[in-house]
Image (tube, rainbow, N blue to C red; front, side, top):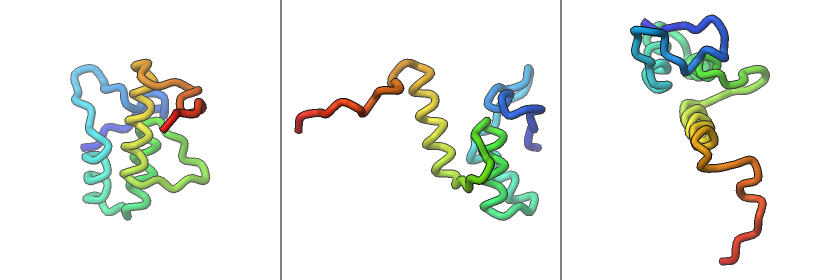
Length: 88
């Protein structure tokens, strides 16, 4: 069973006493329930708190965005990252 948060901001936060599903597991479960890959990816993105208005997500893109968000949360990468010119 796929847990559905009441708002996108609650996504990614497991409820007390429940294990959070990975985006890949959520995507797979939604496809097993009859959603197309595009529908499953969009709903997975929404459940992870990512914007879905006028966007089409793939599972790879969702995982990449969640990875970058986590790096930012841990302070491993910031807003200005990549702006400076690095010598080769």
